[in-house]
Amino acid sequence: MKLLYICIAALLTSCNPNKLPSGEELINLMHNKNKDCWYSTLCFSQKVYNYKNDSLVSEDTWHEVYKTPGKLAIKFSNMDSGNGMLFSNDSMYIFDKGLITKKLERLHDLIILGLDVNNQQPEITIEQAKRLGYNLNLVMEVEYEGKPAWVVGDTAKLCFWVTKNDLLFLKMKRVSEKGYREIEFSKYESIDGYPVATEIKFYNSPRSIEMIEQYYDIKVNCAVSDSAFNPNHFVSIKW
Image: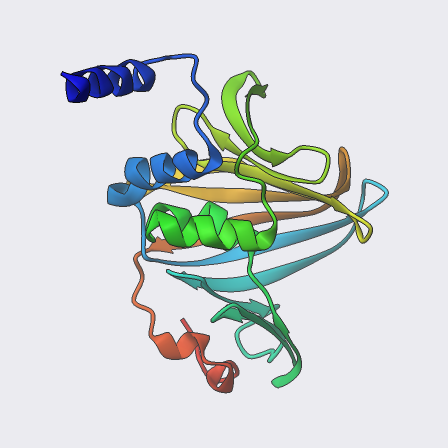
């Protein structure tokens, strides 16, 4: 009988429409919702527009390749420039003319919360989000551009938004002594049946745009070798 009461209580709690999920529960929901309709690799090019005081000051073209979990290679201007960045094994490498000029330990919020969350085990994402400093005990339901969304974390310091219906990453915000950073997945498109964020906006203060990325020539589940994410092969590898 005691077990029956426990089961009934658990059922009633789970059916409570007003109960907010925790950040950990939301990460699990994102994974369970999208794991069967997500990609393990993504190849694309992008137009990059840089702004200062809301005025366009420069443009560039980047070429990127992603592979789950946690791998992203970026080549600036063209495939042979030798300039770019590489994220792999919780590290970031910066290249200039084919040489590594900087290596830093770095977990990439957008890779983890915008991509990996959908196809790696939730407990890994949860641990990484905590390492990044997100308070997963703080969750609010909000309206974002007329649609319901969740906000996870401290909205005054570090938080991220997720669509309530599709459970897709919307944006993140970080406010610290180093300054203000807000990054928004402002547009999703269906590419071969997969949801892909095709426009990313970067803000260096509220409503002050710093950069816009617009993706094109997008290929989901493209053939990518692990050597694409080996810093020793950055210059020679192409995709």
